[in-house]
Length: 188
Image 1: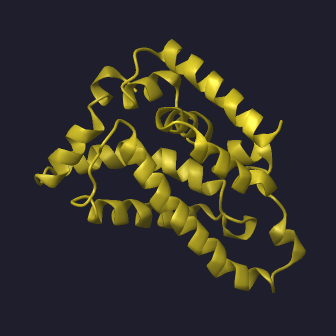
Image 2: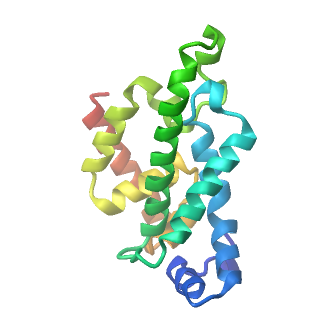
């Protein structure tokens, strides 16, 4: 992100609540690409159609915007965590919905995507639940930083800005330590 893009997410949320549609557009601009990449790697192979992924991401984002009056950004990075939770619930619902259809689909449809998410590449799909549990045990700032780096492929500079951390290098070091904690929790 450039300096002009580093407008605080909380400021954009406040602006949108006050009726500033440009603030909404900036939120879309900032988070939709990140959420699209994240969602694409989590849908089952038969559900990874780009148009359907976009629909799922946009529906999740619109759901978040519809509930924005209830959302209070208590900490830096809270909005991305909020979006991730909503999108994860949408993905789980989609997987459940498609699970019924998957029973009658061909074996080829159930093969892993060659475009698996970074998390799936790192730990494999079967241990994703264990990863989620280990991630939840990390302190909040570390958890958010790891999510942003590993799941959303954000740069250290972007993460430092989003989480209001002192520098990209300090962020990198924190993430390295957090990944070490995660690896220990995962028994690797």
